[in-house]
Amino acid sequence: MSRSNQQESLHAIAVASDPLRQGLVAFAVRHPGSFSRDDAAAAVEITRTAAAFHLDKLAESGILEVEFHRRTTRVGPGAGRPAKFYRARASEIAASFPERHYDVVGEVLAAAIELAEHDHTPIRAAIQEIACARGRAVGVAATSIESALVTAGYEPEVGDHATSLTNCPFHHLAESHTDTVCTLNHAFVRGVLDGLGEDPERVEFAPDRPNCCVRIVTQ
Image 1 (cartoon, rainbow, N blue to C red):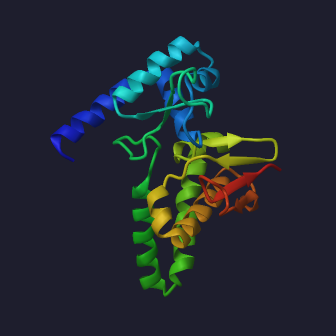
Image 2 (cartoon, helix red, strand yellow):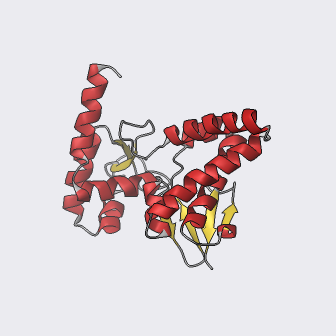
């Protein structure tokens, strides 16, 4: 990383260090598209004026992107000024928003290769075994499923019937090596539940989900 990029990242991290701004960043990451100041204010329960101030600071630091578009299809006189909208920056920053853990993939794959060579285990089975063990260690150290998933970078969102994972900590690798990384991801989350003494069969492979290929169904 160049010095200028490093300074940019450090500045962005400092700007986002406030808990309120962290909440806004988390909302932006989970939001499927651009959002207004009113949307953000409602999400973190602050006034529109406060939301505007903090969103603009996050945009100035490069964490958010700004867009302007009209709320209606009218053009010309009387159409009104374009409204200001925000979205999470497409590229990641250091101490990334959203959170990524590519080191976990590297460690799992390296250990799986060693296992496959040593015990003649099929490589896919070795990936599942190592990923499950890694997830189990996270689960053992956690006090709840939600805290374990937060630690692992998944941004869990608990619903009535299932817990959705709104962030994939292996996003870019999953885009280019989908089958391998999703196999690893599924086994990892199963391991998390196993480490917590929960039924790993609750982890469903759901490749049609928009953010992560697995979800955890409610018992």
